[in-house]
Length: 268
Image (cartoon, rainbow, N blue to C red; front, side, top):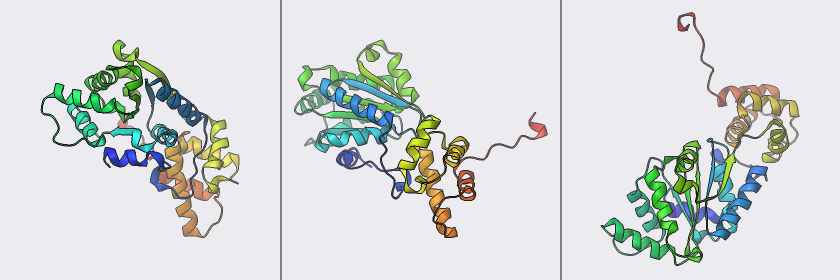
């Protein structure tokens, strides 16, 4: 998916993992906090960092919060491998729909991007920012740091622990981060509260069953719960069931998590 494809989806509901049918957005504490933090970051035209382990709903929460922002103002950069500043320049060139050929010289390219970003109150979202090198963070900071406050783009760095570490360990970068938000797994009481709201299949499930599934495989993360729910629905369909039971739950858990390694005598 290209930068512009993702940006065009900023006004729509974010996709659930595996396109889980009938799943619902749950107003968790983390999602509500992200919404407030993003709104404050945009209002201040600042840079903020949302970080945490994979599967905790960082990108999902950011896209859900950005529904309140005009989609054509959101520039979402998402790289699957480690980008270079040139990669970021090229993505921004396309996202901003700039005409002609990209400038060959970096300084000329940067001047063009600065002028273009200053024209509208853009929101630059750097997703999977754990892939960014220090040079990439510095490049984004350079674009943001130029010009008056009212002309700056708001910037959101969204990524894993490495994103946090790189920003935190560079004083020039860390000092410019307006808000830090760490995503963590849901606590057991949050799981029991939120999972029945997440999907109808869990609406009447016993709390003990939900606790068991979370302890064995769910881990307080919506990505794992999406995967488990997908397996549960498939198992119920095959067996002609209308409600989840412990047998189906255990079957789904075995499918959803990696098998624990078997310890043999010669491994000692």
